[in-house]
Amino acid sequence: MKTILHVVGARPNYMKIAPLMDALRAVPDVRQILVNTGQHYDEAMAKGFIRELSLPMPDRDLEVGSASHAVQTANVMIRFEQVCLEERPDLVVVVGDVNSTMAATLVAAKLLIPVAHVEAGLRSFDREMPEEINRILTDQIADLLYTTERAAADNLAREGVSSERIHFVGNVMIDSLLRHRHRAVPPAETLAREGLPAGFLDGPGGFGVVTLHRPSNVDEPASLRESLAILCAVAARLPLIWPVHPRARSNIERFGLAPMLSGVPIVLLEPQGYLEMLGLLANARVVLTDSGGIQEETTSLAVPCLTLRDNTERPITVEQGTNTLVGRNRERVLESVDEILATGGKRGRVPELWDGHAAERIAQHLAGWLPRRERTREAIHT
Image 1 (cartoon, helix red, strand yellow):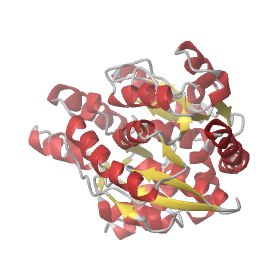
Image 2 (cartoon, helix red, strand yellow):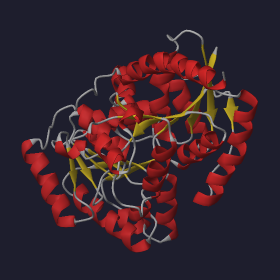
Image 3 (tube, helix red, strand yellow):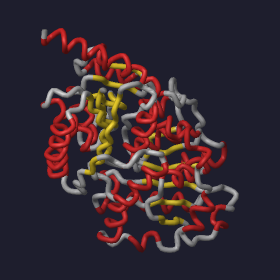
Image 4 (cartoon, one colour):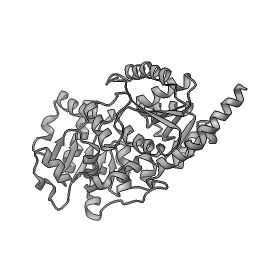
């Protein structure tokens, strides 16, 4: 019996781990353990993701909570090390690029436990982003690197990673989207739950969806003011629905910027569950975001996406998908919105292997890799 230990910490991790755990149930003699680091800003919502995605309740909950990058990373390492020593896993699986991803990888590597990184090789080439540091370090020391797009292998090769560690499998985030799309909550139902009239969605131009959480857009007064001014200008063209990240909401109040949104057709919602967000994204005319995962989801859904960043670690969403990088350039944002309203905007195409079967490919590879590794270890020790 081989033990695989899966690590989740923040919202996108759940959507990536769920299909993989499901696929691995078909592999004989594998025991799976789910560890929730508690990095997510809302544990009640985390439990909602677990329920919606049919994940088992975590076997271990580290309860690290929010903190500075250093404190959070250190707490994950201290508590995760104890889990590894007690469970003695044959493999640790990490996903994405959050602090929990890097912290768990460092712990496992120093304990000589193999690590598989799902969604490896993505690069924004912007080291001011904490996630970029997490990606680079994780990929350097992980044993198995599962990639979502072919360009990721080129990024890894430039960093000296051997091709034997790299495996192009597709996008597990899209596995979850395709599996649950038929269960998406209609936008009118989401608004009704918030006590808002469904008529908000009845305008001829439809509605847009907003998500903003990157420090570059919401953590400084000037940049947040600029972001809000752009959203207000867009809202003059079509109404917007904005499930507001807690940090963004707190900063709007802290910086005294709430009056900017008064009387503007922007509906501010609390953070939504996966199925509610899927319904909003699937029915939007345009999505304005700084999230990497939403760039991928809108490409799969063929919904135009405007990314309020100057770079992306997911260039395939620009080259093949529906994504356009607009930064916080107000003129460019408004020109793009006008084009979308007039023509339907960029439709793109679904990238290679974003077909709902990425997790199955990973499980198939691991089904062969785990026994081979055991035989190699036995040969070394004899």
